[in-house]
Image 1 (cartoon, rainbow, N blue to C red):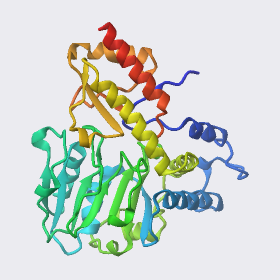
Image 2: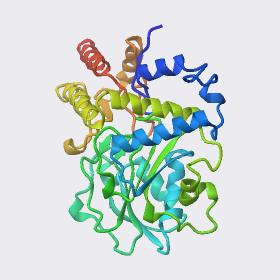
Image 3: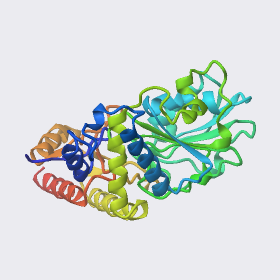
Length: 359
């Protein structure tokens, strides 16, 4: 078997050590006599997995005690509707910042529940930047301010936490959670699909401050109600048990790497190496403003688009997979999440240099 370097934006590469452990424990987890996939979610064995999962996430992110940690289903997409249902309370408006495709989707769904103030947008700049904070229009009467910390498709990332001017701050961190330290106490709610930096698809992490839950309208389905899910330990219905287990393995792997601060340094080095290769090239370019380039998703465009197919074919021949850019923007995209080893980025840079030399 020869594993390739998988640059997919999600579902994305998992640490090989995690896959190996899952393989070794597939038939029997510890001394349980059964596979995790066979366990009752209410049984004594899975209770250990669930408790360790939450404990490890709290430790890695230094989550304060007055926050609930939920492990839900439906992806970040479900949260686009769940957030306004749970956080509006008696208010009728919410503020959103539009910095790319995932912001757009969140705004579209929120408009089904409330009036949306688009506080800032980089749409006119084709989502290649983040609007200057000084120009943000934040409505003091809104229930919360929502932003997407990293736009997977356009490769734009916030390097800091914006000032919400007193509003509850909500962030979609699906594609950069656990890639850099975050002060959770500055947020009312953080949510993230796990299929990029935390494990396989099928689990959505929601970290929400205690005082924000319990106000969903009676018309909100129980499965979408944060307070009900919290009361039931995220097990109102049968959860994606095996995926919880895999997310837990990734968290333990991350702790073994030295935690979030240590992995951030690797992410800085990996992204710098790739951006440097792009910037010194005469064939490739990255359209994103320098201060807002994502460490996780690196889009790049070949100056001669007729070479795109040849580039992708040659890349696969060299064991470099899933480099095709999103259909809405074209070009290429290398997603270099926590699990992507530095050797993978080095191999990509070497291939790009050789492809440029021969073309």
